[in-house]
Image 1 (cartoon, one colour):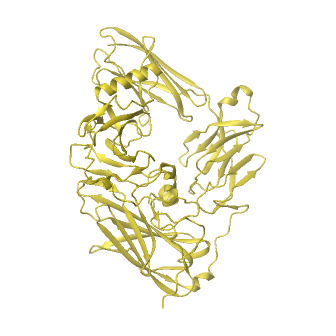
Image 2 (cartoon, helix red, strand yellow):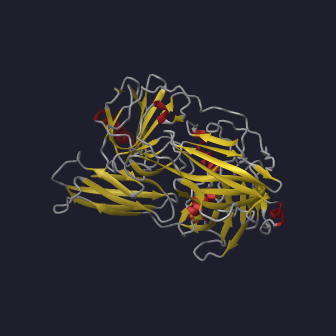
Image 3 (cartoon, rainbow, N blue to C red):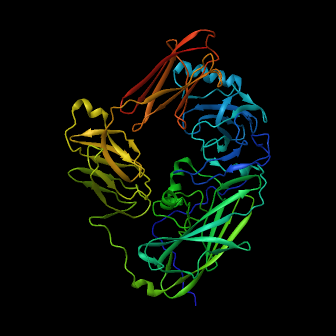
Length: 574
């Protein structure tokens, strides 16, 4: 006899069906590349702290591929930034939608001229321009730019979006009739079972456990003997990947449904979302397994601090189950890609009341609970931590500790659990071991220390004898002084016998601790445009417009967030 499953209402979520409305025009937009549609990144995929807001389209690992307007309209926005979308164009269409084309290499000539003139007028590589509707009208299929690898792109491709003009919400472009060849069903690779903290067990432990899934004759099965055993309040998640016919890229799925004992218990679908909600990607996915194990588990249950609504058809389904007696429960996980290719995985969880004899893990000495609804403030002689309400997605056990760090001006403080996601920044204040002279206080920072030892100086301010900074992550922190200027090093300049890269100058700028806050370059004493690519730490200047057959003076400076300035000067013949 199967016992009754109780859906636990641990917080109130208003029912909402936003994001599931159909009726998008299917013949209005065309693909922005004149090649068969090959998708290397799907809409809604979990990225680093956000949902992917468009489609990544393959350009054959090449840059310079012509990019075409998906429909008639006008260029309404041009944005150049070192990170993020890099070089991006926004085209507004008369049907109430905006298309976005990002990570570009360059634009067509009239737009390039406007961008370059604006950059020189503002003496800045990063600019944002909002042309008037009559300035740059485009026709469907007209070449408007060329694909690239700019911004935070991890390889040459085109990022393409369709947004609602009024709400600016990104919408899955495949809803508009763009076709890709995909006859391959998703693959389910892992299932993870979660006991609720101090209210459940999975296989004799109160910690979540991950179970590998393999396929036998095309049917998913667990790569283990026996069954998942549980007692108390339990929920599940999974990792699934998809492929399409013309790409080997691991893609995200479109939708998921979880049935328990033949009853729908949870579902989501990636049709659209609001940019204000994209940070809930860290609640939709398991931050711990993603950061620690490289496994992207997506939850089939709502965390209390997850207020995302648009991807959930029924937000009253929370995905928690209370197994209160010896019984077996049939789980069925159904995942689909946009073309409807489907993979189903049926498995059982066996409930045993005997598991309740296990003990919950003890809390560390001095640990306290931080909840989404209530933050905490920790005030010690040498450490001050403020975690505001809304900073965590679920109840988190908080503790801190310290150890000696010979390379720092304080102990190294471990603040919280680095594998717990934060939704709001926390404030960390540390008292240095010794008095910092006034002339060095501006060079002093709280540094976040990666497990590899890499340091990141955080912006901060002094309050009395403590320096405070805000961090978007739990982890290790310490105080340091950074008086070392950024490195500014020649990578390439033209010379009589050294012209293999053509008419450009390339200079690398980097800093071991503090971020590069600004840079500037000049040739022959005048400000000159250098394009910045943080991925390679490279500044590149196009010399095509300078006077030829003469010697030129060049100077490049870089300033870090502590105000340290590095400079490189030289001359070259071109």
